[in-house]
Picture 1 (cartoon, rainbow, N blue to C red):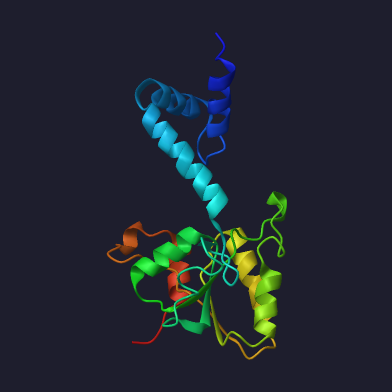
Picture 2 (cartoon, rainbow, N blue to C red; picture 1 turned 90 degrees about the horizontal axis):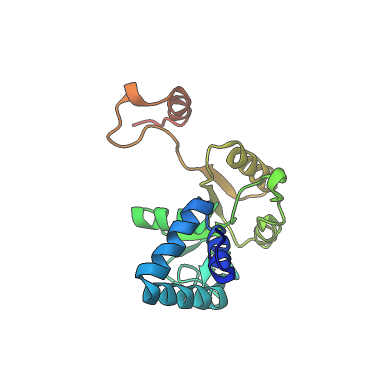
Length: 198
């Protein structure tokens, strides 16, 4: 049995979400059609509103509804200190820590030529321009330790080399409350390389 064209289109559309395959999309579509049509309408309206009303901040590339996001528009933030992150989710995680009070630069990904993500797609030309204009004194890299994250960090390191900008990378290693016996070797190696005096 085939779905009607509208149901099939709904299922096909839902598969654009990360981690949602045809079976999950079918379950979601059936749930909305069988039990929650009002929720489906609200979801559709919220999605349309977000797609039309959310843009990238002109300074940091984070999601914003105005020209500048709330962090870039806040005069209390340390504007000359910039933390480079891969995604808006990383900004949220760092903000929840309450430890960082500077600005951000959001790459919206990490270097991955196979996925078509080069320096230009990540806005690294914009970051390089800001570095050249002397807007930034300190750059903090908060990219992941994946192959793509390491490649991105090395690319930015090469960009900063020869400038007066201070460059650092957030520490990687043993999580709070973690027992060493359960931590993998690569994480322990990062923890030893990132140790600091007490």
